[in-house]
Image 1 (cartoon, rainbow, N blue to C red):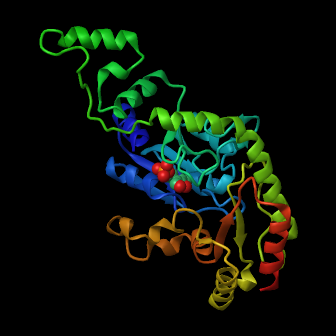
Image 2: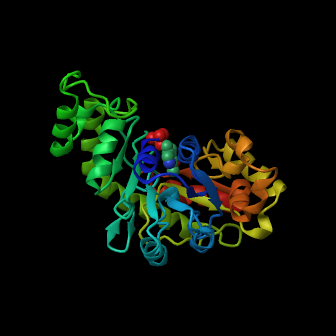
Image 3: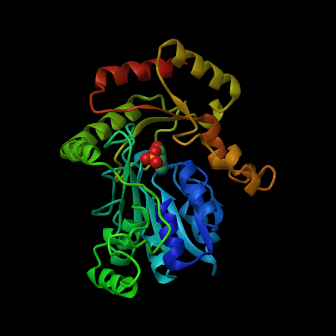
Length: 330
Ligand SMILES: Cc1ncc(COP(=O)(O)O)c(C=O)c1O
């Protein structure tokens, strides 16, 4: 919400290129701020936005590309970064499902002008609820400090701007209670910070185990039935991903697959984290033309035949092997 509000307040309106596989808040914020969302299909190698499709949809009205790194994958490539830089288009990263993942030698979340991390308890690092925004831009940073704290001036670190504003209103406003912009209360708590800082110490180690688990899972999956050739370079795996191969992509196999998992008490989610192809979700219906979702075949494919199962540092290889034997038999 406040990432997109800062974008609007400081850079103006226009179009924002967004994925069809992402989370509700990424799209709701874009729409609420009056931007036009321009949807892009995913690619099946990393379940994130197809970069060739992004490049096709960029035009003179494009203000930003809001990319989601899905389930721990890196979604960036150099061509996209160079093109956005050349055309002065803002990159925003959603790293909520990919804490610690890399592109080249830098972590995700350091490429975007503004990047978002979620610390909801299902993620790599948790403060139960909460999250983080990262930016190297001092103006955006100060704007966000106000946005998250009721729009109040006293939060900002820009001393020059603070003093100038205090001076401007000194005859009729108390300096601790000047509200230059409309704001929210989106602050994390001290308690959350204590939990988060302690988890941070274990993040790298945990991510190595998560990646090891995922590689072991892919190695043991039946590659006749399930896709295993994902682009895992730089990944910080979030979950064990199962996408059916084309010849098994039908409703009867799907029914059988879900029946077996349920019977064996294996929890799963179909369609990736955010409820699959967002264009099928009711919250977007008034913004779309009828059957718009059909124009995004890869998102549709994952929506219908893509799953994830939990991955976590304490999950043993023995259990993963057992899981593979179970799904390979279906
Ligand atoms: C890709 C992505 N973005 C954003 C969010 C929202 O995060 P939060 O629940 O911290 O607002 C999620 C939630 O799981 C997510 O998966």
